[in-house]
Length: 191
Image (cartoon, rainbow, N blue to C red; front, top):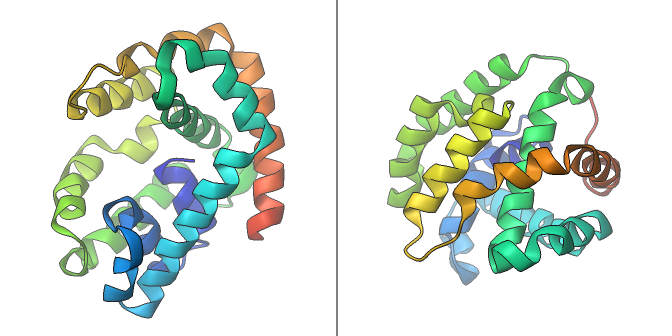
């Protein structure tokens, strides 16, 4: 799961949202440098990543694209799954994705002073580009993948990943649904 999935599993809890947002910027035991409510979110993010990476549906999808994308395959699948979550948002939430996105952006903005500088910098792009809403279309997802590719110092081919999403759309969708069902059970998420 990428940002949207992590936020969804945070269940509207401010600390979990913040921790899930900054987790990739916090290495090792540095989560102890944050208030307890945020450090819980960082640890939750790590548990979600471990669950995701070991899930049978994710492993199956990774095999489909590994030859072309190598170690970037997991990142791509995280983005694909956020695409499907955004598309099916009302199956999982009682409020619109637009309302939820505004809610998350407001929480992060109100607490920017607590967050690492890199995540503060990235938030400007996230909010201005409305990344959470952008995931809902394949064009928006491609834009996000292109942006990510531009931040990676060596060739990743992320900008091409929309091709495999479209080519295997029914397979990705079915794998997402199976994965999401297990994810909800594991993390107690529901409407």
